[in-house]
Length: 446
Image (cartoon, rainbow, N blue to C red; front, side, top):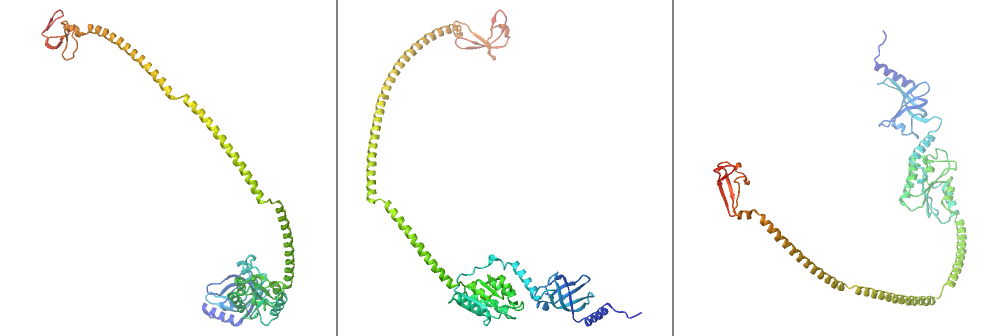
């Protein structure tokens, strides 16, 4: 039986072997499964058509890249092979990476351009208008380069006397990015300029790298003063050009765009002045003709007043006549109503009605007396007849009326009573209470 290894020992020896055999290698492939944890290190897989290898790039090395790593990117990089002992897997630790088929600066340029475009830094509606005639221009460029001389020459030719403020900065190298950004912010803080020109002569992509930085792009975008970008030659485009309010193909063209031609302006002003004077003279002639025409049509105010006075007097006379006619008509109508009212005086009607009432009252009293006499005679006749038929008159002749004591029924037959019954006898004057001792059908015994 040969030598028996532990897992840890075998893994450690394999790690030493791999790291000694492949201290540094160049490798190319496509990034996949890319992610960055809170530590800031980059972890990803590098693959081709036949294999996959784990990869890592630590935070310090990643911060030196000019572009951002992302899944799907094809890269070429240098790194050292290592074996991760806890899992027994090998990986490559990258020290340097650059995009495959394109330079790092170009990749960084495209990535930053896409990022800032998505944030809206290139939107046209956010561009500030360039003043027509700035009183002061701040030129941020190298103090000794050809760009500043071109701007000064063109400015003196187009509009002599304009105030130019040269803000010297480094336009290439490590300090260029910070100096240009600070210069833009300083000019905004002073707030004495109407326009800023950021200028630089032509060069390679590496020479223009500072103007493709995010800090300068944001400084230009956040500037309250309009910014003209004149970086590089006509074919060069930088991030600064996209964020500026106006892009000039060259520094000389920036001065051309920033300042109008004074001679041309003076010529235009002279022409406009002549045109204005000529127009005013023509307008004055037209106004004078109009005034003359109106004056001929205008009447003498005293004549107008006399006409109005005559018209007023006529209206006053017509008004008095009309009032007088109305009064006469109203008076005649009032007299007619008065006569009609007197003719139908209610006092006369009252006398007639009173006389009629007295006649009716006399006839009513006579009729009532006749009716009363007739009724009185009839009443005496009926009373005599009633008295003759009254039971009282019969009682007066000695008769009596016997009725039961309790039920008050008239007794007409002795057969209806028996011995001991109580009866009541009604006389002409008074009553008798009797008890039956004996009764028969032919003789009354009490």
